[in-house]
Length: 304
Image 1 (cartoon, rainbow, N blue to C red):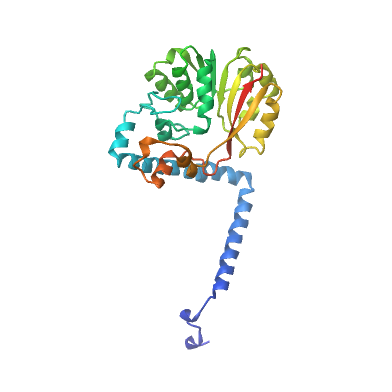
Image 2 (cartoon, rainbow, N blue to C red; image 1 turned 45 degrees about the horizontal axis):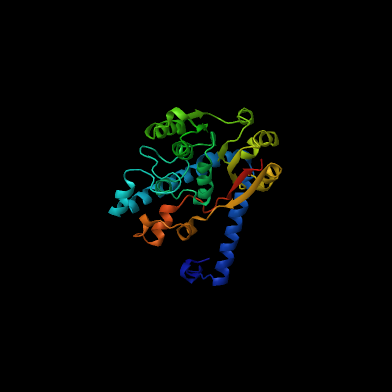
């Protein structure tokens, strides 16, 4: 065929319906390829340990940078938060200096809005003055040290398997003067819970799906005089909350508390310190990474 007989590129046309069909078919191909790759355990493990976790890490770093910019752009807000003393909430007055939020959100902790959904239950635990308090999945120590600070008569046990978090825990306990009443342990297993005193205590738990392994019927029966506040992760195991509620039903009153989506937090929480920020900035500062997480809490109070 002669060159002059070849159709010119600018003469080729794709109709709108043809374009939509092409895009649809392309998406289908990517979807099928993704399903095929992700169905391979070795491929998924490699992606999970690199691309997925790396992407999550970078997103968290970017969010921290954006939050710092927002705070520093407001001199009044910066002056309030710069001392790193928790402004409100059940742990108001907690000295958070030198501590980086571990697997959580820094500014909500400083503002005292972190996990606002369970604030009333945490305040009730403080009021009840339990002699023993256990935090499973203590991370940087926000709850373990906060509870030790607010419950001066309590012995607090913090289970945390990550050595990097241990350093944060130790520092936070030291600057708040509760090191003598805070016992830091490593990984928690069911036998650790079975060794706890039979008499009443309070346990707060956030261990990323491992709660279903820890809270066996035997453990719950042994700790039937204890009160619990458990973050459950149905995203790890479907209907985990329902199954755990069934285990607690004979010995505890169970209340399931739903997590609030990040974009709704500014509607639920009045934070005077953020009054000068616009709505987008408030959403950013109050964010706890719960846009897609399937999280709930179980508040279990002993029937005895």
